[in-house]
Length: 408
Image (tube, rainbow, N blue to C red; front, side):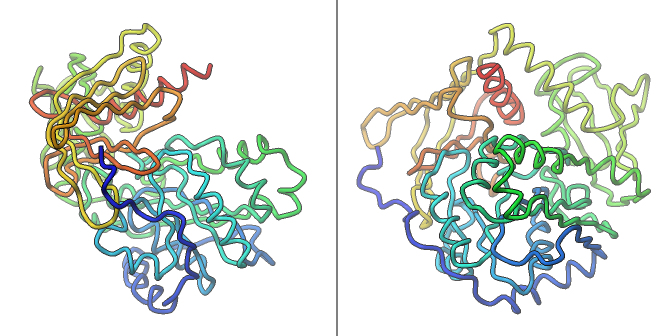
């Protein structure tokens, strides 16, 4: 379909990071503003090279990792849209391009080059911002990657970044006292002795976090007057009447436009029904309830969704290409995209076993609304459903549940 279009050069060797003092200086104001506290555990004597695995809630994560690793060189894995219109800069500071949720052998080689050069290979293995401040699915290949690289495995888990700037409501909510823990899980010698399964299990344990529970435990009050706006993107199904895709939000209130029930989001990040029972006061509990409902559809074999969609492609970092309208289907067989571009019909499929999760965006770039972006090794498709009620959050949940069912 895009055979004549130049693709992003994934094979180019990553540069060693430049401008470290400048980058640290640019990050410092936000770290000071949010009174970030960094704790290091087991890091005595741990020097590069090592594999750094970080959780992902907001852009603040990168600023904390800059502080945690300074003054050493770091090569970050960054999604292709991060390189858009600034490929030269991201390459200059050592970033490595990745198309999300693809099995990319080239990336493994690039990471090996980084550690062989004596630097830090940094990955955000959840591969997207957390939707509600809790752990996203991790790829089980992390243990195998650690065994291949043969360097220490270090985690950096941040707390407070989601409630400060949630994925569905990005403005700074002025949370102070954010925290981060940098921990060496395995030395190089321990990596050699442990199995890939043991390493992955330990990583999973370390990645258990809940930003809303952290906020409540710390007693941090958020007075931002629009703190609930956008929350309906995550909480798309009403627990009172069961209706999907009719939730809305404004100010501090979440509401169901089907039955009229409303919930207030208080300063501690908890939900309170304005009338009647509070089904879920803890936002992640509501999200997991939605997951269970999707799981039932998958287990019953009834999950299916088809819609018209607008499609953009990003074959390289120069800019988006408008592919026009297509038909998107997500069902028990996975994703399927059918359309026509320049008079040529195309069909692209992502079977269930190809995706353990998927990447979604809310109001992406302010263009056409919410989208799911699906990738091949050479292309990224930004797919915007249109003329229908839908939730990209449900796409993400269904992708994970379909994959889980297929492997159990």
